[in-house]
Length: 134
Image (cartoon, rainbow, N blue to C red; front, side):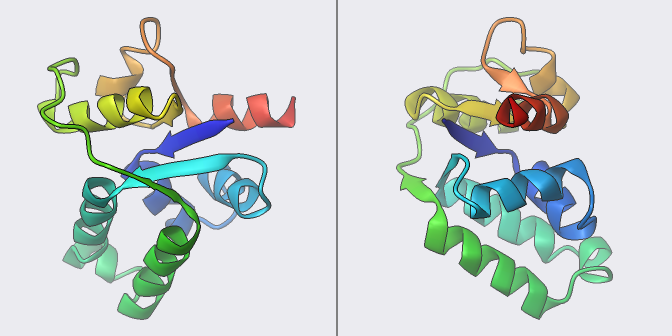
């Protein structure tokens, strides 16, 4: 099974080491699913992790190490060209296109994306974790 984790899920995994996103990250590290990402997704994650609000809770060393683990283990896909408009937030459309391109589930906590879950393979972290637990 392959998944694309929205940067908000990755950040939540780093902020709360015992929550559902952290559980997903641990299961990925254990090899229970393949994680697909792209340069755009990683760049978005790096930008968010450098924001002062997050920097107060996550050191630059922690952020760098986290991104290095991701880069070392993800399936790095090419970024989709000009994704079609689907989400109420056009900045999220690349995530949908990436998941479709990679035949992956998009795991997100973003309500704009979750509103499309009836039409597209988009799940909450809790639902995807339950699917992995089987």
